[in-house]
Figure (cartoon, rainbow, N blue to C red):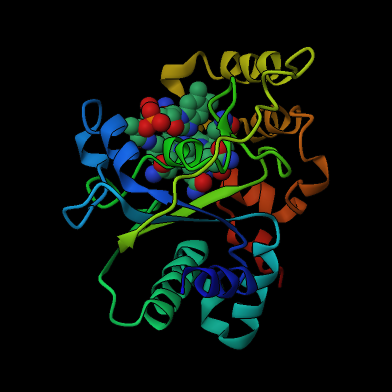
Length: 234
Ligand code: B12
């Protein structure tokens, strides 16, 4: 059931997934950020499936726009596709089994702390610049949704750390330069990201892991500037 759901998500552009139990996540997040706690159906061993994507999402977005022209003019094409695909495929593959879905695009308390969940499920470690670093894809992943299912989940294995054996840690000076350009971490926000997109993109590109998985240019820039024409050129 879960394997079939993961395969269907991958075919729809969401090929970065991981499973585990919700208990360890809620125990970490509960005391520091209660609004980010996930539902658990009254059991700590409830299965949680984290859903994300890599650069291949651009193809899925363009296919959706080709199938339905109004899709390209939506204010939030990625969020819209995510909600539609994840909700539909969960319903199809989980049948009558109780489940709850949370999206990273929603505000708390309808969301979850995705970088922490990715680490706890062994999908990606948290790098020195706070980005999730996947062992093969490096920082080139986005985390979109968590599906909690009322069945027992597996206990995930921790992957070997790529950051611990990284020589020179080139992301650190690159991110420091980006943060300096905006006048420090407290100024980090949508507007400063957009204004200094090149510096933040350089900080992400500085990571030596997963360079073959770098997002296609238009998708990469869109994440910082939210200019829809990048995704759907006329
Ligand atoms: C709020 C937020 C931001 C804020 C952060 C402001 C702040 N410091 O408070 C802003 C808008 C600036 C931001 C920027 C970016 N973000 Co952001 N952000 C989030 C969001 C929606 C919630 C994080 C949160 O509150 N977690 C709850 C607390 C309890 O958990 P936490 O682990 O302690 O979270 C902290 C860190 O994540 C940190 N943080 C988030 N972004 C950044 C960036 C930097 C430079 C630093 C130092 C810290 C930091 O702020 C959180 C609150 O203190 C998450 C999605 C989610 N629901 O998890 C995405 C998320 C963490 N962001 C993500 C990304 C990719 C980015 C950007 C690269 C741009 C983008 N959207 O593509 C930029 C720049 C980051 C960079 N390193 O270059 C991804 C990370 C994926 C990955 N591979 O690591 C996430 C998971 C969204 C997604 N759809 O995938 N983000």
